[in-house]
Length: 91
Image 1 (tube, rainbow, N blue to C red):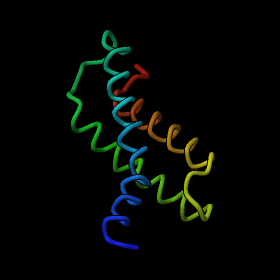
Image 2: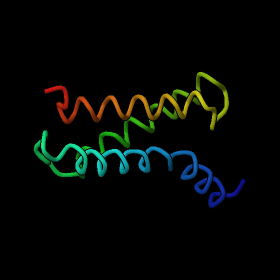
Image 3: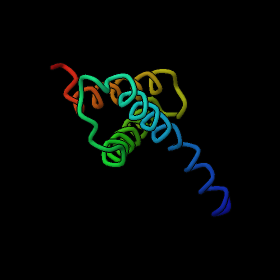
């Protein structure tokens, strides 16, 4: 496998984490604008992206292959919960 091919596979493996993070941050600011003070989008997105990459790596390690439905479900559940906690939306 060439270096370019390896980088392509690596980026494709980690691509869902920033995509879900961006969606959550944008939708969270749009939908919860009245309840929560907007605190920017870069820091929450960076935190959620790192957390999402960790979930994807854990899914690869536990299940033995990437792209399993359990990993995708865990990614969405963990990132949504973390963003909910980050916004302090329980108030």
